[in-house]
Length: 527
Image (cartoon, rainbow, N blue to C red; front, side, top):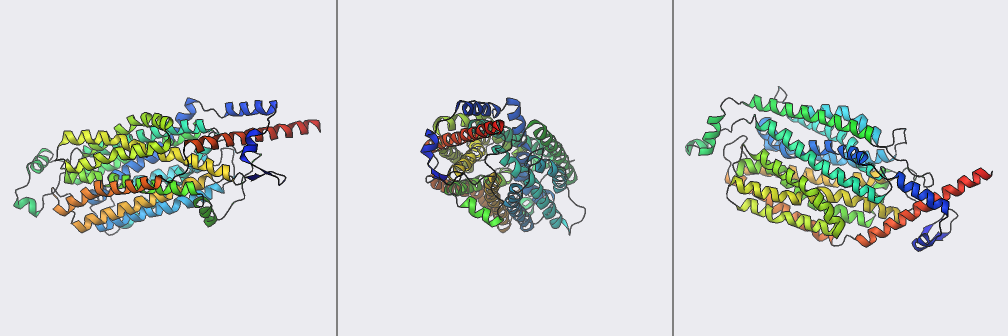
């Protein structure tokens, strides 16, 4: 039940049954045609999502091993950097979302100026994350400072970009199609980030260092071959390779921001539905978390994302240290991301055929057997490649579905609160806040666990406790977290019937707005 301008109440049914004039129908049709996005528009919009995934993939897969083996920080300090950096990143998301929601409209839009202005400093800070300063005492402060600065500036890019989904078109079908394009490009971005970072660094991978146990045991055959076959590569070569990779990624970041700015037109909200008055920060938290479907969806993806982030953050170390694929781990990661890219069209078809909620169950459950299998099999490179390719199919669902379901929650909120508008950035920013905070916790705890287990930087072999810890971090813990998220999903109320009902109601509201604009125009002409 909602209120009209004169204070009278009308029901959702009355909205559906209200007659619409021929002029209103024509305006609605023009409105629908205007909101159709060309393939070029969708591609340009999708390209804007690549920087977040490219940098996020490089940091997620490689920052931990970089801090431990290249910058040679103590695991305890590395865990502090990873946790504080991600926790700070999480805090900045709702803060930036709050500021974006209060931003005035400009001739370039409300979201695009944030994206353009944050890009130059973001790429500079990202580059400096992968630089090893020439002094030892200030290393921890250096990495913590530039990591936090980059996360803040990237938030100023990504939160407005995420909210831009609601402003490229008012048609749900067009937004879903653009989201599918975006997810495909973002997964391609993870492939690109993994390929650039992994292949460049892999060509200059410094050999491992034998420890006391290796000397007593006369080393393993694989360690001997590794150190004999690449004697010329030093730690300095590896550090230079990380900087080259970061420079390439920075150039791609800037290019994608330019394409997004010139290829996407941000649509202004309807004049007949003015934005709500700006609200306070904590008022915004209460608003978004008070919407039941949103709170449940956030909890679902909080747990499932935490599981996938544990896998992502520790898989490189698991491949290189536990499985012994020190020279091949970057190729294994690339196979996972390539498989995920190829599976995106399948999941887009699946969710349109069977519904988004069913797709979450199918996608998340499909990856669990391979998480278990990868730690149970013996160290076999071919089998590991096959398992990784199969696991990538489930990873694709984890990329696509959260961002495909968030617009449904925003639409549901707009149906239930027709007089409260302009809060899209808050919904997206708080979702990102919870997932990033979970990521910070996962990386901090996992790196700290390796410290307690006795991890040896650049060691040819690791203690048994380290191998066991890595197996728990890439298998048992992620599986448990994913299952918890799927249990919560059972109570998520927006099914396909409710989603389609919301779509019809919002479409009817837009037709009534078009009718109102027609009446206003006719009255003005008469006067």
